[in-house]
Image 1: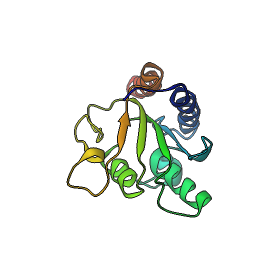
Image 2: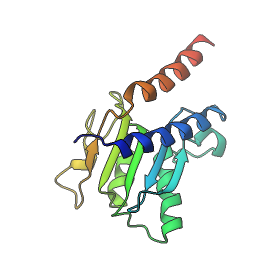
Image 3: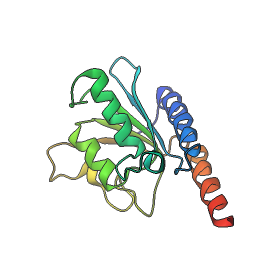
Image 4: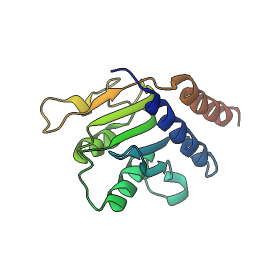
Length: 155
């Protein structure tokens, strides 16, 4: 699938969220959930270090916020936008929330579960499949991650 202008705009907001994660020393991944009206209904960034919570990935945080704000767990009219390809847990959460569309920035060849290592979101054995639009602002999203890990390795 091809990204649209709105996908780029939303990815810019997700990148802002990723930068917030840097403040807590976490991996800079950001996510937003966009509602049917084109408005952001959930935001999240990695908060594992800050919250001491292994499930506090950007996608899970954003999905939780969107569900509370909309008053429902089925996000079947929303789009999830995330700076890094979701892992197994986050891909599973995306499917379980019935999100129909996922827009991602950088691919994750080591742990990605939306086409790189696994393809959970499009697995025909599941009761829901997700459209994937990949590589939106990929260079910018990837640069945030590379810089973060290069600094860690230098220490």
